[in-house]
Length: 166
Image (cartoon, rainbow, N blue to C red):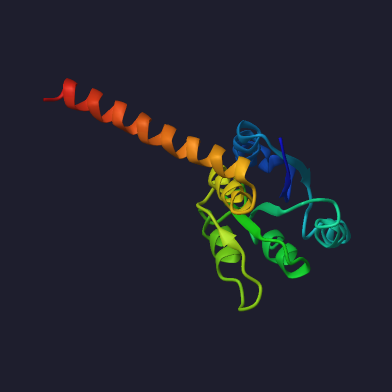
């Protein structure tokens, strides 16, 4: 198992079903992670502590999921030099998810947040593994296998479609 560690945080436990695919992908690749709730609005002190201590706690990449105003990814990015990947979440009070997307995407110069698709936590897990894989050969090899498996899967599906519709 890689020593690299990913912190997966979300604004509410109601975000867990959306964020779980990131954890599942990291587990599949053998990347250690932690997962918790950190609300930018309801627990700002906890957010400050988490972000400022992340590097010292062995975190290499932070995945932050948030809905609505979605301040969590940007605020965390303002408090750490670690890469932060934002997952916009279509929450119960969301404006079709656009509020979350734009809140995470439109960060000011100097505070970048990588942003994945609405409810796209699996892609956040993949991106975090790619970042770690740039410096960890085991993770890089696992990512290579993952990508090769995707190619094989698509080719099998293409063959099935061609055989059944041609």
